[in-house]
Amino acid sequence: MRDDLREEIMRWVSTLERGQLFSLRTLFGGNKDFEKVGTSGQRKALGTQFRKAVDAGEFKEIEYSHHNQSPAEHWYRRV
Image (cartoon, rainbow, N blue to C red; front, side):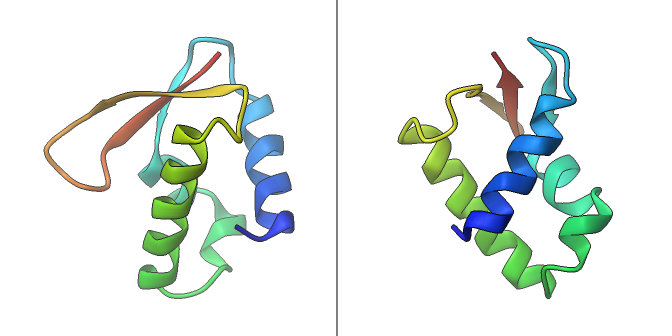
């Protein structure tokens, strides 16, 4: 994941309350900065990279919460 995107993610997540849930759709689809990243496919790829980075412990303030039916509906929590 590009360092500038990693920094933007951490800036955005730092605005959330501890314990607050957010989805990839909210993070990658609802934030105007991420709309500039590229196509829908590129944003989906970033979502996959993000999920893998969270699973690997690269984002210490984020944990995986749960998954809804839609692939875009993975939910995370700020810890």
